[in-house]
Amino acid sequence: VRPPAHCPVVIVGAGPAGLVLARILGLHGIESVVLERRSHDHVLARARAGIVEQPVADLLDELGAGDRLRREGLVHEGVSFRFGERTCRIDFAETVGRHVVVYSQQDIVADLLDLHAAVGTPVVFGAEVTSIDDFEDGPPRVRVLVDGHEAVIGCDLVVCADGTHGVSETALQGRRALLRRIYRRSWLGVLVDAAPAADELLYSRHRDGFALMSMRGAHRTRLYLEVPASTCLDDWSDDRIWTELHRRLDGDGLVLNEGDVLERGLTPLASSIDQRMRYGRLLLVGDAAHVVPPTGAKGLNCAIGDAVVAARAIREFRCRGEEALATYTSMASARIWGAQRFSWQMTTMFHQVDTDPYERELRLRQLEHVTSSAEAMADLARQYTGLDLADRWDA
Ligand code: FAS
Ligand code: PHB
Image 1: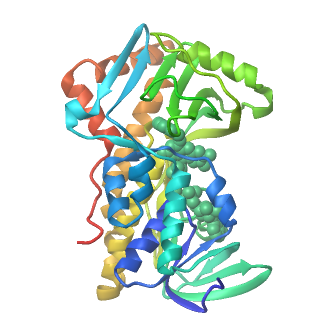
Image 2: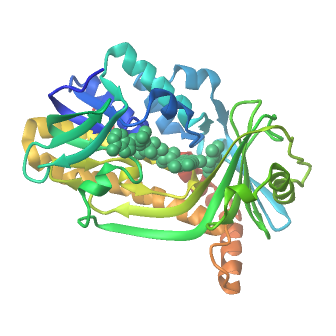
Image 3: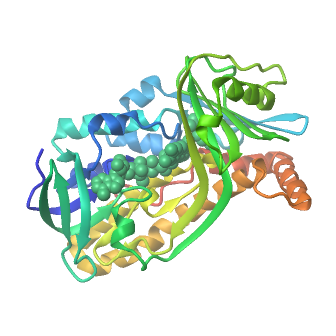
């Protein structure tokens, strides 16, 4: 697929945000093109998120990309927190009548790409956007390199769904209203060829650090260890990883099943938000606009929530022009700040984000508080299973 010379909406990035946005626009008869710098195979191979909030799973269904998620995804009606000598289960169904679906981000992206191929949305792989110009005052020009050839695409709007360290960072250099928090901690994540040792996720606050047992279907376990941000992956042999995982997660009748480590990776914990998600005719969605630590399983879900709001702004723009873009940031920010706050709370409760003894005790008491009553657990369950999307895609 070659990029067109002009397209009403250019979307940079074929991640969840860009692909959901292209689908919603297509259903409203608005033409877009998705430009993705990586190959199709690379995009599908990237190990990322694994938890889909109920409202997001329902949205994917409505967009026609939910069949495999419903067939193969695991519906989870609770999650367990272990801290001190206690293991406490948060019952989503009992408290708020909701659930989450365990289904990988790679599979969501694969399902969306299949759908786009079936309906003919132009998704151009190996297309690196090298610059975005003229977006502040009028129709943007998007410069893209495809197979070594440079092309310029004229458009009415450009949406940067290019994740962290994408071209939007360069295009907006020095103008961004960024707030950020660095935790000096990372997650060492492994995908293991062994059945999960329990039916639901287990978040464990251990004196040696946080650990999480998740899963990818009934036969593969996804496991994470809190490590210092300075950690070098090469310093962690499989044996060392297993020793630490058993130390932090075994107990209360649970013993992890060992198996071949199929994938490993490091993800630094960071929070950031661009308080301006719109710059003239350039909109930011997903990780390009904000990042959260994965502890709250919000990154993927927030990115898809942005796409719904951006689609609304684009539809309004086509009727009312520039003024319609003015409300984009405020429409998106309530849900984004909800995810920021919840991710920060989950991260600080479980991780050794500081060495101050008072802070450490306070964070333990916070964990005790959120599991101390039915009301407190209902509040946590509501946030974990998903804040309502800010808008209806088809309204
Ligand atoms: P994405 O980063 O998914 O997609 C951006 C796309 O833009 C990429 O395909 C990139 O190749 C493309 N791109 C960038 N620059 C471009 C250019 N100049 N031209 C063309 N294309 C360009 N979230 C969770 O909830 N749970 C997790 O466990 C979790 N683990 C993660 C692990 C890692 C290593 C990372 C990096 C993130 C993780 N996240 C997790 C967060 C993650 O899921 C993101 O929130 C989600 O991918 C955001 O989706 P998008 O905003 O679409 O950005
Ligand atoms: C995952 O399965 O990758 C996962 C689950 C829960 C989280 C983060 C990641 O909070």
